[in-house]
Amino acid sequence: MKIMHIIPGSGGSFYCGNCLRDSKYVEALRASEHEVVKLPMYLPLFADEHDINRDMPLFYGAISIYLKQMFPVFRKAPAWVDRMLNSKPMLKLAASMAGSTRAKGLEEMTVSMLLGEEGLQKDELMKMVDWIAENCNPDVIHLSNALLLGLSHQLSEKMNVPIVCSLQDEDVWVDVMKPEARDEVWKLMSAKAEYVSAFIAVSDYYAEEMKQKMNLPETKLSGIHIGIYPENYSFILPSEKGRNIGYVSRMCEENGLDILIDAFIELKKNSEFDDVNLVLTGGSTGDDKKYLKDIRRKIKRNRLSGFVEFHEDFEEDGLKEYFKKVSLISVPVRNGEAFGIYLLESMASGVPVVQPALGAFPEIINLSGGGVIFEPNEPSVLATSLAGLLRDSEKLDQLSRDARTGVEKHFHVNGQVKKMLDVYNKVRSEK
Image (cartoon, rainbow, N blue to C red; front, side):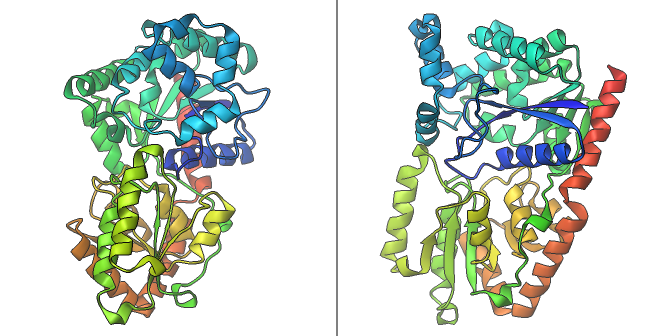
């Protein structure tokens, strides 16, 4: 089977769970002897830019489509201007800029993208569809998320193949918009669902959420958890490492870094935890600069600078080195998440997770057995949960073993890919 995955990139400036999810699926699909084409949009997927090459163009270059949306003069610019704006150095710069990965201020563009051939990006859409038709001839086209549904009508019509769409964290992008734009985006995504043969939610929690928000029929909706290769991660018991707490995600307010910092400050008031350090990784965007500056000031003000490490390398080998440093992690996301692939990467490394009782976190932890849930999502409650585990090395080691076993049993990417292939075969037979 020839499968095309269309994936929006983050440019590698921060830990992008959606990019990792899609790349791991593509890797596993290729290993199962299917031909898979990965087509990036907006920005490269990762910092090393290996997803841009001479044979694979990057469509909807982030700078180009932004300028064309905001300044009509750019819509008539010659082709060489687009090539310059979509060059590797320019896209790398765009990935680090404020606003490159947030919805506020991009409401009109989001609506325009979802309008597809009726939006301002019509020329780019037709260019992408024509390129796919001439170069790929896929049997199935898989969209990374529902915000790409503006592509679905033309792809379905031109290619005459089933369209599959993953669902993960669209609400995080849409629900922060101005009310009128937010309502229009949900209506457009619901309308464009007509051209999609199957939707794949990354958790049971999120399947229910999106069924309501997009009015999706149950016949089109499946739940398939995210998967990883646990054998790619080195398992080390917490008792063989220092008593260090970790955070691995984009360092921003939405992901609750300040909640963890306040919990750590509370923890360090007790001399029992004099040896405990906090190790942070996950990167940031330009939007997070002031927030992180305030975080660093708070750390310094509480005389904890010597106990907090910012681990800069969060891709592949750098992330594996990071997990060797920490005994447990917490990412106290304020509103929960549809999944959180960092949980699997942590647990596969033998690092138990401590998460708020929000979103899909209880579902993942109950299934894996590799962590604990706390509520409400407040610093004092988190500090108590962390302290309880740090005091009990036997329990922490047992959670570590359960975490690794749980990922191997329930979240191995090979098992999830088999479920995905069942969906692909089903929609192909019905087309």
